[in-house]
Length: 438
Image 1 (cartoon, rainbow, N blue to C red):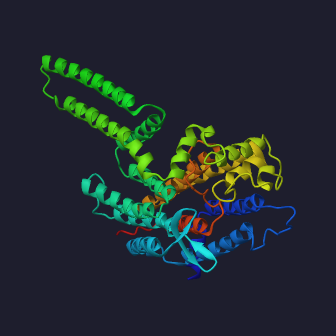
Image 2: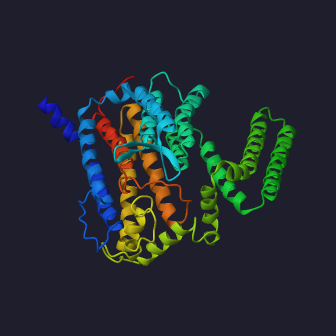
């Protein structure tokens, strides 16, 4: 038993564990800085403050890590579906019995603490997806497989949407990167980026004008393909199928993009709530509501810019001290880094996250077992999405949708979910020489 424990300890990727520790401790210190009041004389360990509560979450996270490492690695594939089912049940229960906090009906209150099951849905979905795609008889090129993957991802996302947690729902789009690694056509990624670009253009331009423009472009491409087809017929080429295939793709893309254009106004005006509509409008015009929806982003930019090259120093941020930036210990924790540690500190933190993500991809690629590899890519994709959107929010590049910075932002549910997500993967990686064979 002792030899097994020693081998497991040796096989754990300690570099990733070290980076996790750095993120968590640095996050804790910056949470203290975000709520610091020099006149209150409260300690960083004071449980009445966010920093004190976060320390409690960190301590319980360490307990979770010990439990995860102690459990047999085969447990995570064997119980992937039961865990997924349990989380689905918890999400449904939250809709019926949950507590509403800040407009989101996604919290279950236990005494003085609140838990958000939606945060753990990402972990459960990653397990279920990896377990399904990791099976020997599953082939991704089949339409049935793709539809099943879509159902696994979409089911919890729809329930979370009913809880009014739009930001968390968007995180589930990160799984498209996992599917791309497993063989999803690049056309889906290209169409995804085009849809985002068209969505933005529709908000900035007249929808009818944009529709006409796409139609003209598609028509010109079709005329060019027909011209090539006529030349091929004159040359008596036998294989004419590819020309018809290209025409079908052009028509399908044009219809899909026009569909996106026509659905934007309906989505913005009838699906999104009033405060979400304002956040999108403010993204393109910060002066549209400077004291309302645009206030957070404006103050965030001021905080980041005021730090200049090296920052004002730890606990010296004036934007922080006078509470100008709302939610500064959660969604806007990066502002504290920018103001107190400047461009240099912000760049170092971003570089650390990039290295951390590359490390996760390296670990995922070295897995012999398909389940472990797919799960590893899920972990990297989810953390990447959170990192990209959170940093983008504070800079005004993305609308404010309540996405925490992994391991850094204040919150027990967030820290627990990311800790479980990461250390289950590190447990699987420690047994990378074994194959589950399910």
